[in-house]
Length: 127
Image (cartoon, rainbow, N blue to C red; front, side, top):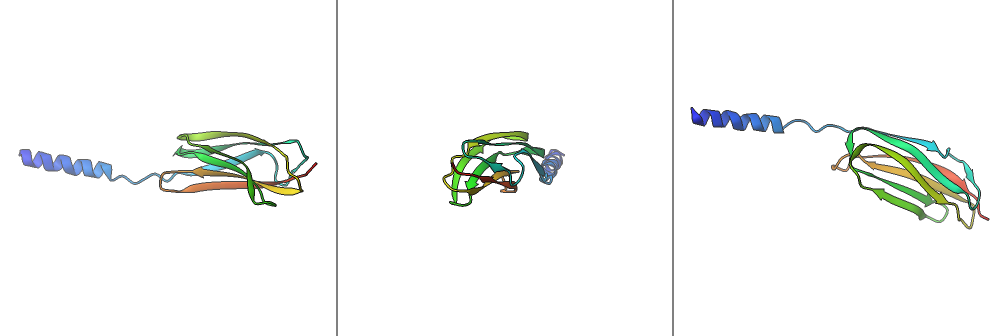
């Protein structure tokens, strides 16, 4: 009898622990800037928006890349577990040549490496 109870308990635990992993979805919204905005020298590129997930996510990275030179002009890693994130990042345009700058948000939806990404580009003017 005791042996039967132990077997039933072990089977119950194994069935409970074998539940499917939840698939996390994420929606990234940019409020500002608009795609292809022109940013004068010395003005601020202000990325605002939100990331809304269907469950807890595992952080995100924001990167501004000067596509003309290939260099990152701004990068920040946000390593906080949450279902929603508010985006509010700024960089002052200091390019020396007319440049396309890509603004990228890359969200880590889970620890399995599933990612959600959104990008827009702006045109930055030199002095």
